Image (cartoon, rainbow, N blue to C red; front, side, top):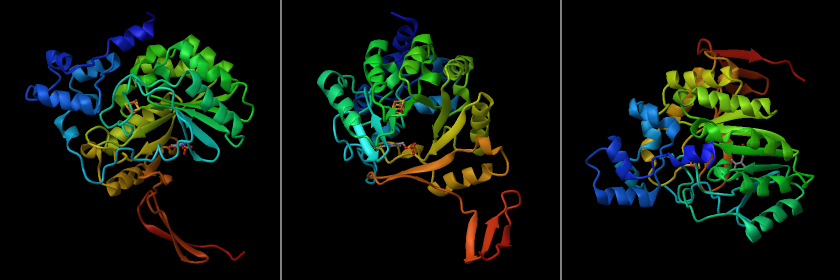
Length: 355
Ligand SMILES: *Cc1c(COP(=O)(O)O)cnc(C)c1O
Ligand code: SF4
């Protein structure tokens, strides 16, 4: 077994293990535990064991299951962003003309309790391989408008090197695909996977590579994670971050500021801050959207623009992602505008010349 497979196998995957460690509340019955596991698998990665042990709430809430996951709200959906509606062939979601999601696995380095694709994620039987993989690649080959391929899942970086190569190398021969983007939680949760072999493989894709690391709290930015990010950057790839705004994890301005500054300090641009999708059993993670907007508004004028991601809502049902902005501008008439100063909060009126 190589290092990263060993690290992966040391993750905690059962309620019994959690109880032994004293990480699961003792009043969760066997029956409830079964229901929780059936609903969504457990995996607490080694990289987060120390923060969990230290009772770092932002980490505990992301990875330790609670009974609140068993309460479903009527507005919650199995497939909240309509992945299935836009899947022309197995493993591919094609919702926007110039880019596709390619989902080779539904396994991950950890199972985040807020996961929006939880109806599929953690399914260990699913594999995109053989004929279904060939079909997916053929689809991308035939659709010449596909400019970007986004590997996601699950987490594509938990695939073995061999299986990942079977997906990445054929892309090199597809001329119209210029960008390879990888969405992953591995840099913070399974940093040993970001090894020389992985960097070599991405280089062999012949594409411009962007790695979007899913990181939600400053506690995830430990030295192993920083080293993993450096290896990607040294390989010539642009590393961005996406985060999910989560109640009890990062829903205050100090936590967000610390996270985004920490990312920018290691050369990682915060790209998106996602408002949690309406996945079943995740209501305890959502703050009102108005609060999400005001948190982002509060960053503007206070922290460097480099540290401010776009707040994103993926419209439930599959109508697409939108940027949700605080309102900074009001049109008074065609030439007169008012802007809200991010420094003072006052509305400043500006008259533009006719043109
Ligand atoms: C989120 C998503 C993308 C990527 O969107 P960007 O705004 O380019 O980051 C692409 N396809 C689907 C289906 C998505 O859900
Ligand atoms: S890593 Fe991503 S896909 Fe996997 S459980 Fe977490 S949020 Fe879901």
